[in-house]
Length: 461
Image (tube, rainbow, N blue to C red; front, top):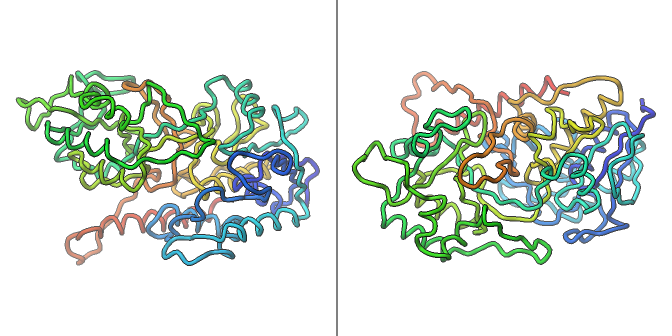
């Protein structure tokens, strides 16, 4: 049964396509406004829906041991067009889900054009959505057109959008060696809501510091595309750029040792210190303060594991510096992804601050279902936080902790789904199983998280 008031969706990428499909499948009339075909972007090469502009990989498909694999499975169980197309056009890639990018995009495009409840309009929305559009999803992506970006800023404030990521790595707390690091704020100074021991500190002696700086100076760097044209700002210089400016530069910046005393060796002053700040409300993720970088992903883990206490670090996100457009979502969006300044509008996809193909599509899946409920005069909650879908939304709308201290920059940055976003789960060692060995406990914990997620998903939508 179709409702008469259409849902307007701006953008035909992965998020917009998924949102349109979900709403249309729920019986709602949907209008997709896609500017490609009328106006191109610097990154896209076609006017097809859900075009993959970078990698053709959706990453791990293991739903028991990988958070993005769990997200795949949850989306499949909720009728995702993106996952259906990916499964139909998958390529051999071991445990990963890789797709034939052209076949995948063509599949989504056919599905959208052939759905009786979806109308496609090839046009740019060059301003704020008209007032007579009562139910709107903006899924314009990281290459939002300048006119729409300006309209968003005018509606929400000049600090609403970031156009460049300056991303520091994020570490899973349970992989940090707490026998090496210690908790202390500089000069024991407590920030808002703090205790005076709000940072984790990784100590370095002189030799460790000089070896670390040398590794930074020789690391291979990400090569920007011409259209990215990423500028550097003094408040968020990449650490390798700081290292190039002089061997002592980092010791007077993010790695300064002043105001901190190692309780395990209080008479010896550290030559340098790397600080980690709690990054999410759950306390499971910690941000390497001031460590934004343009180093290639392949080398980052090796270099950062040179830091005492991080030898076995597992990274929820590696560092980066990229062109992007994304909202300050924790400030601007409600838990239902509605814009607080104009509740007619929901946002979906990378513009909300999720990172990755699947995460963007997942955001579209959620907003499509929520918008369809609104169109029917019904109300549904967002997915439970114990699910991958719910954990992702909870993080971008309310699970993040604001920055303070060194850089002064806004702290909210794009994030992939990862197990650090989920509430803790209690894992009991099976009776008679003996001691946990190697990764046995981690494997059991992940299986407990994913099993709980799939059970709790059944209660949603």
